[in-house]
Length: 334
Image (cartoon, rainbow, N blue to C red):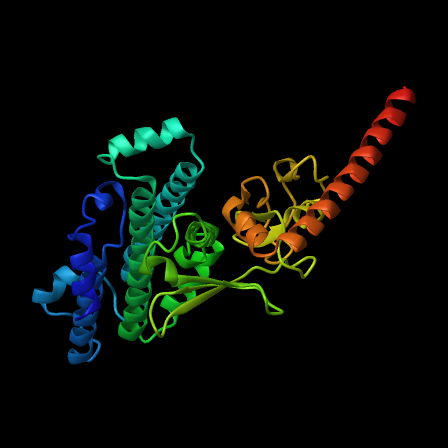
């Protein structure tokens, strides 16, 4: 079955109610734009570069052959908007799911009533399944339509757009919230509920190698690996934070890079502070504490985690003493 038909079935299938308030890739519409562009190019070729026939004048507001500026503007502006809305929806829904995971008994009871007295396990699995399907189906739709764009135009603009998406933090499968969702699943599988189903086998985590990674498997041929190595200390991330650019760091390493103290936190980072990897500025104030990933790393290596915790606390105490001593000396000098 062609992906377009598969995507259509997904949009109008059992998750239609879930998608009611969620944006999605207008795959059919974007394909129609490319189809018009291909038709316009065929007319251009048949006319030998001359004036188009009147019956094709309606295509002139869709694209102009060779450079296709109108097609570029319509296609990429719409795809950017959709990807941005999908990324925002996904992150907010993952936040809500993780909040439910750590909610109080009263909140859990209210959720059970809302979902017709389903137990916690069923609610979490159902929501997680829909979230993973949502982000992966839209990510595949974007990849497919960009590949088709390059095929129609004989260009690399579609490939370059992927780079732009990463720069604008709307690359769906590179979202730190997807890593947090994967860590949540792995933690859930190791809980008292036991193995909750096939869905959870799509995520694996290997901390035994020299490069600790989390892997998400979409199919036999499509796998994504997410490095769990801090780019500053070159060790497995501890008390991990994801900057708004998407890169993961230990909290202490990120604070050091931003020239702030650990007890002050990343929210106090100066505006000009840059990510140590991509050098983007202003990426610390919107950083995300990866609580589920931290719990996963703690459960997988308790002794290592305790050792890192002692080291971070010792460093925090040292910095705090030095800071307040400098404040005391400064106050006494007035």
